[in-house]
Each structure stands twice: as C-alpha cells, then as structure tokens.
Length: 242
Image (cartoon, rainbow, N blue to C red; front, top):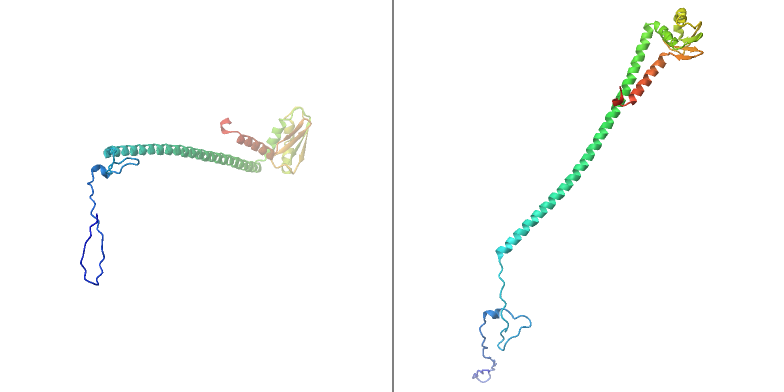
C-alpha cells in the first residue's frame, strides 16, 4: 500500500510528487540456502529447496600428496631405467663399431707390414745379387784360373762324347788353350776339343757344346739361377720355409 506525502505550497510553486513503497520483509537465510538447488529440484511456497542438502566430500591433502609423490618417484625410476637401457644399447653399438674400426685398422697395418717386408726382402735379394756379381767380377780379375775351373765343371756334365767345343771370352782363350791337354785328360772318351773365342761371353765364363747337349757356364747365367732361387724363396711364406 502506498503512502502519500502531502505538502503545502505557496501559490506559483511547482511541486513534484514521489511514490515510496513500503519496504519488503526478507526472511533470514539458512545454511542450506547458500547452495543453489540443482536443476529440476522442487521448491515450496516460501522458495525453499525441498531436497536434502548435498554433503561435502572431505579431501585428505596428505594422502593426495603421498600419491603424487609416489607417482613422481615411480616416473623418475622408470625414466632412469629407460635412460640406462638406451645408454647400454648405444654403448654396445659404439663398442661394436669401435671394434670393427680397430680390426680394419689392424688389418691395414698388417697388410702394410707384409708389403714392406716383401719389398725389403726383394731389395735385400737385389742388393745381395749386385754385391755377389761385383765380387765375382773382382775375383775373375784377380784369379785367371776361374775360367779353367768353370770349363772343368762343365765337362763333368758331358758324358760319352768324343769331341766338344768351348766358347770363352777372347781374353780367356790363351789360358784355356794352355790347359787343353789337361781338359782332354778329364774324360776317357773325348779325343778332341775346339776352343773358340766369343765376345758375348764375359770373362770367367764359358759355353760347352757337344753332340749330347750344351752346358751354359756363363757367370751371368749362374747369377740368374741364383736370383731365380731367391725369387722362389721370396714367394714362399716364412712358416713354410725350411
């Protein structure tokens, strides 16, 4: 119901009227009214929720913290295990690759050593032959009887011939002729010997020709035979050499 305020005004004065409603009486709120009613809940005539208030679920912070801490520790342990397993795999792969590289390196070094050893032996043989050749030539200059011994050695390889020819260096011809009788006496069947100078034969060596065959007793030929023997020995592995 509205209340009207009556005011006396002097003539010529305008008055504005305001309407004031009576204050509404509000019922006091209860603890259950602080929670809004769920959708579909019925209310009574006074607006109160007819459903029983929902009880709050208690939350235990200590238990939650313990669960979180346990989960965190489990995650850390699993992470460490996975990291250790991955590291072990990588270490195995790295170790295998390292072993393969070291094996290849050692095999390469072994091949180089074998090649160097073979080259060293080849050079040693060549040097030995060169030295031997120089020594022989030096001995021939100092000892004229070398060519006589070469002819005698060649005659031992000829059997049952009546005659033979001896080809020697021109500087050795006179010496061989001086030993002609001694050479004929070396065999019972030989009756004649022909001594022929040959510039293609070096001093100290000779070639004997007969009906049964020829004997090459040149110094160069003998040196080649020695070289051939050394080459064969060079190709034979060390473990198979006598």
